[in-house]
Each structure stands twice: as C-alpha cells, then as structure tokens.
Length: 230
Image (cartoon, rainbow, N blue to C red; front, side, top):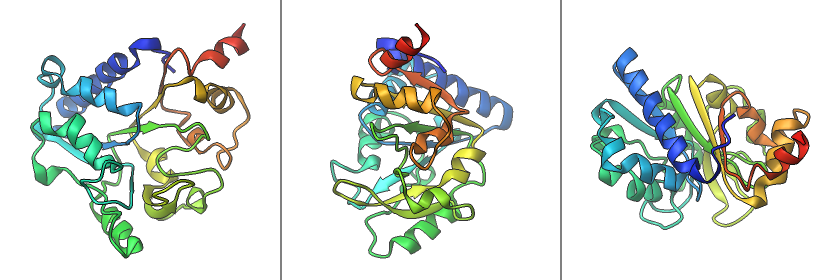
C-alpha cells in the first residue's frame, strides 16, 4: 500500500504511467480498465498533462471500463464522459481502441455479454476506486455479482440513481496483472481501516477483492490506519 497523502493524484499518475510504459516495453501493448468517481478524475487529469502524457505510447494502449451507469455517453454521470473529458481528449488513443460499456441499452444482459467478448482475458492494468460503503466498480455490499465465477461482466444495481449499471466481476479483478485502488476523503477512513486491517469479508466490503493491489490512500482516508498503528 502507498499512502500518498495530499499528493495522491501525482503519485498514482506516476505509478500508472510507469506501469503502462513497462507493459508496452515488455509486450508491445497495454490493456487498461478505468473507473469513474471523484478520486480517479484528478489522476486522469495528471496523466493528460503534456510532460507525463508524452512518456506513453498511447497508440499502444487499449482502454476499457470497470463499470458504467445506465446513462447516455454524454450524460454528466457517465464514467465514459468523465474519462473522455479528463484524459482521452488530451491523448492519442485511437477511437477504435476505446471500449465504453453501453449500459444505457435496454437489454443490459446482452450489453454485458457483448462487453465480455471485447474484454481481454487478462487486463494489464485495472484502476479501481472505493465508496464509503466499501464498494468498488459497481460491486456493492451483498450484490449477487460478488458470487459470479464465470461471467466477467454483468448487470448490477446500485443504491442511488441511476441504479442500473454494468460492472466487471471478481474474476476480472483477480486476474488483472496490476490493480491500483485509489481512495480519498475522511468519510472513507473507517472503511479503509476495516478493509485493510479487518477480517476478510468481501460480501460486506467488496473492495477487499482487490487487497492484493497497490493502494493509494490520501491523508484523510488513512486517518484510522494511523490510529490503529499507534
């Protein structure tokens, strides 16, 4: 785990850039899945800045998504819309290599199965966030999707509107070569401590599926960890 404090966005962006560079150098390609949310956005904005963006051969990057709300791609609540504005409009990833989840389709089960067909068997890099309730992607506490062992993308339901979603499933997280978990905010401090220090109960705290990843936790979200260590 890395506790990046107020420099979380910079530290995470540097780590992500280095990971993408390494994959392109070693395999000639990097398949990345991105998440939405208020914490990842400044990370994407750092990646889009010229000095950092210029390090990456973006034409050798393929972009996927960890989850999406059932809204059009231009909607302010769309993860794709946020990622496009924060990152994709500033870098040279070919449009054909950006695969958005079409969660707004009427038949979300078919949309999920279609996305499974384009999602690589193993992501090179998966970026996740964490909600105050311990959810990650659109895997919420108690969700049936947490028990999924075969399907890699499935419809899901969130607790707040827009409730209908598409999400990756636990096997996708487990199989990714690298996983980063980005967490910021005092309202998440207790959950961070439970997830990292408490017993493994992923049905209650789905983010525990990603315990093997690299965690970037800002000063506010790490407060309870400091108290536990004291």
